[in-house]
Image (tube, rainbow, N blue to C red; front, top):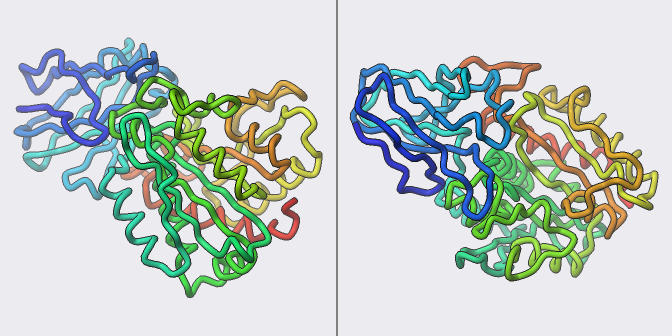
Length: 375
């Protein structure tokens, strides 16, 4: 039996693997920080052998409550990711599974690989509606890509959607895939209507370095990008610096920052509640958007979410708050679960890439419903 992580987003350290029923593993900490929770590794040579994989430092994870009622995902072909029996007890996350093939991958959530990212860019740019732009490069020298859909020269509104500021939240880019496929569908009436009046600026992966390194929340030097929006620098957070500069050039009328939440088994939105001086109309429009999304997609709900910040107490280093303040526009964070959707559980797949894409499609329906009220 062999365990490896020498691939895109791989993360695990082997402590002991002398017996298939007692494999002891450790999640590697994000470089330059104390964050840990993402794991992704391959097991070869254990076909038909009952495996017990013990992540012994799970109690030191950034969000240990995220392990409660959680099930890891596994895949033989890296296309279909299914849930496997998982338990959390005594500070140890235990994955129990009997592989049906010689090679099997295990991960915290279905990974969104660099190859799939490149395929998404290539497929998108082939549409006459889309242009691909290199905003710049990351600290590890990777490309930071921006897709512009629509005609900025005649657009009434600028709509920005970004994903994976936290690289381990791979469900965010799965959602972006659904957004892009719909916007580029020439037969879709909602996409057509939106693009007659708006230009969309989409960053499918804000954190290419952290994604490749197998990080949960940070970039190459340990910067949490969603705490860098007030004063980003090219030396520490070029990803945010470059996107923020481009936003200043285009303006922003709608902003959606797509994430994943370790603990809550729901899809929900967090808004710029505590931003000082924010127009009341913005918060009212957020409620209108959420009501529309609830009607249009049963996988979305408004009962569970984060506590609202008190007036004037917003964390202005976060993207949603910074953008709302700078542009006085509808600005939101969309959270998806690492677990299953408790309102509509799926025993085999849990919250899955397919459901992420479907939610992405619905976000555009909700935007269409409130479009006339933007700004």
